[in-house]
Image (tube, rainbow, N blue to C red):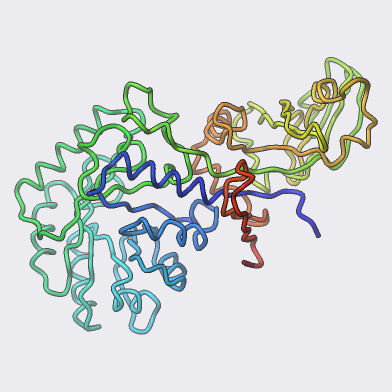
Length: 418
């Protein structure tokens, strides 16, 4: 059956975003895109294949994510960010490590010692990155123990010190704290001697946009490859060229039912919204089970487009009433008036109108960061919350480029086709 809701990912926009990051950091800084959590729910296998040619590493969170992507034959190693303390003989992670296709992250001395013993038992030399906790207070070795740990790993034959890293706590909003963390990190590095091949990396999306001092040997970024992040920083606080990112993600559905209600009538569970005028109500088959955010009372704003010659014009259509599990109701009154083109439209004529929930226009109310801000969530959280039951369509060319070849890969919870 045809899908009534679809998430589109424009792979050419991802290409453009990676090229923009490359221009920002220069030719000698290596790239490590983050593709954990199924590339924020957008389809890690397809996106990783697109990112791999320009990347030195691809970062995931857990061994199972690494093993799943390792089966894709990407030709680029996978950096596992969580503290892995055991590798079993014969499992997928051992195979990746034996083939040089995975790196692990060291968070403390005990983990390093255990991994070294495992590596000797399995006959491996495991490439590792030592994470130093400079203020995020999450993972990573304590500052007071960092110097000793880096030296131990560098001198351990069963481990290869491939990187030393830290993670900023708020490079989006707190440049002073970010500079303080970098200073603490550099103080440790000044007291140790790193192998020539060891990569130093500290930057996430927002830090890499702030100043070249954060670029070091490699940058790690997630939001940037999807086309987001620059809107979070004032123009005077970001590097020139940061605004070249192009949103790659859109989410659309359609109107499946239309009715007219009188002023004074309420819509939805709890009667939380009451019409102040006669209103045209459209039913859209997406709800909180699909990822429509409901945490904050501010209702989402959708854009609607009519079919046919009026399809290019988008009109705001706010969500009215409570968000249900599988459906929302939107106010189509203004859309009907603006798109009617000379006279009221028949009720049935609005069936099938396209409803944009997330769009690629950074100035529209459906821009992903704007939707997330109204809901009181992070853009990453909003993306990860989009249900796997919604088909993902990966488009090779930009949808706005009529001359580009368009190849689609549809992914949902049950099937993968190419």
